[in-house]
Length: 425
Image (cartoon, rainbow, N blue to C red; front, side, top):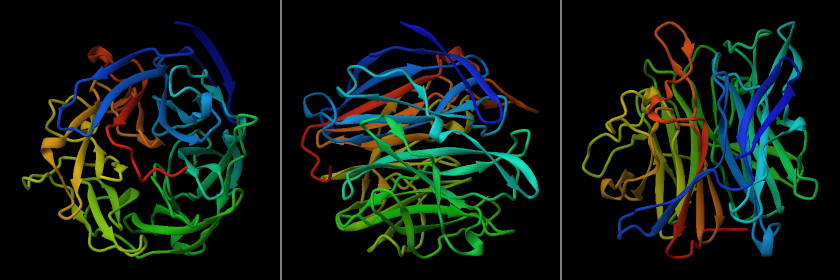
């Protein structure tokens, strides 16, 4: 194993740490699966890092078809650094990639075009960071497009509401292995001054239109969700329209972190809520029916709460990836580990309990912030980092890693028995 020190200065404050990384696998294993499962599962750890102060978070990947070895795609993973002594403090974006389907990986490198900036907000110079990014291949323009949102911090790097928040995006150039400086997409409307698609899984239509779910917080109200239809020409992302408003009127903070997929000619939206996850159905991807809580097919609650869920979609079936209670995981913050996947019945919108599979094991750290990547017709990857932070009684502190967590970035490789005809490159 090779040990390397990365020392990078953000715009406002320095980040210095040791990263354990190498070209190749830190860990690789095949995982036993039921003979009835239509896939095989493998796990790998291309990099890891934790020094008691900083760890990786939000590792999500996108592909650039044909750029890799022998016509393989390049898989590009972006991830934030997380300051475990703060609350959602992201000071840098790093990236790594593989050209040989995970046999070797480059070392994580800081992306200067994606670094924090200083801007004036409310008469103060404040740091603004890019976070919660999700790179996805846009087939119509042949471009790897990353979408996310920005975080406007106080001068001492604290998150404080109310604050502006925007939809951000950047594109990747495989020739130079660089990202363009992040920019903002404009959405008109007073209610959208605090809005963005952080941690959001989008869906690209065959004509190139992008269905981008986002969440927003009108002044004095719970957060709400809608889906934006956007136009992208390979360079500029432009808002066109948005669908109906999804909301919940209770004592929670509302709805957050929606993700969309299409299966069987319908669209499905999964949503985060403080008490439980929800799902909704649409015919056109913009207008959704009533939300319903996630349940197993025996009628019991799924047990997911205050944490995102995302989709793994195959042409033959759709699956939900999630965390939940009831898995001998009471010691994990918000029960955010292990990471599960289960097949969804598209008629009832329930998770079929008998299909539930652990994608990434629980080792004490939370796994709630993850991504899904269609790599090829034969493989889908789920990427997640061990978030080395938990809440103490009166303060934030590092996670107790007696269960084995060490800041690993996991790649769960789902290898389909039958080709995924929903894959588009």
